[in-house]
Image (cartoon, rainbow, N blue to C red; front, side):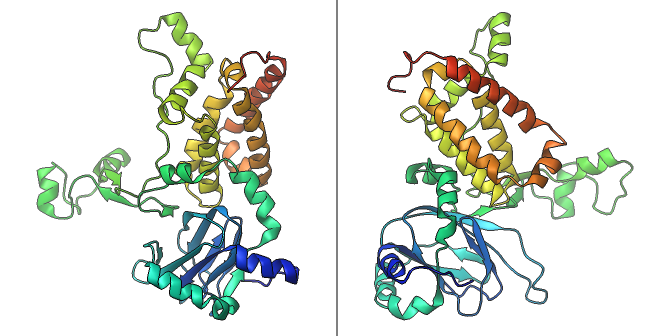
Length: 349
């Protein structure tokens, strides 16, 4: 990790007040990062010190030892750190991942007593990017983080999948009326049909809120179906009542969580969820009067997120599907409507 210039007095205070995450045995050359920063670790790397309290995203990619330019898929995990917190983690060489199993209290206390000696092996948190990180995660609380992250704790760029049915042996394929592996395909469709059906490995999926498939209430008339299809306020209320009834702002926390997972964690499914959630938020005109604080904060969240999306992201993705263009046009119209909405319905929301 590169050296960071910091005031000596501030550095001393941060050393004792900030959190420390120790990661032992991470191979040299591994691509490692925290929040919005990434480095290739050197032989002396043992972790990060002087981390400000709050939610942080650690991420890494294994490197091919024979060709250091080849890196594996990115994997990451969120940690909620407190003042003077100390976490001790280990690199699992068999799985090529950070083992998130909590260290024993005894091991933590031993490590704490040796922190002064460990100082030269710990990279300082890059404070120059802290303001940006806070602007992208300020609604993500520890309960929301725990609710959304996978049970395994690891967030992988490529989902780990398993076959729904066994198909390794010839007899397995025969039982499913599938041809032998060496049977030639006669068409592209036949080839697709032969592919095994896959499912996500239990405990590895990000636990996003399931978006409603039906955008209108049961028993709705054709006129009501049309109205609810144009104004998605009913769908938004369904999401809020299902997951965030006590705190509607948690919808923004999930929007931020998904954004970090796809922008930094490279998780495409998170991008898809971010689009769906943003679409519902931006197309819920009647919800503005009821959730004024939510929509005030949404404008700020979107401002900071769109500032971080690379220009080529718009070219590569938006050119295929003008999702952001159309959605943000609606969002702009909502902002204009928002300024005209009366305040009598906004108390306590």
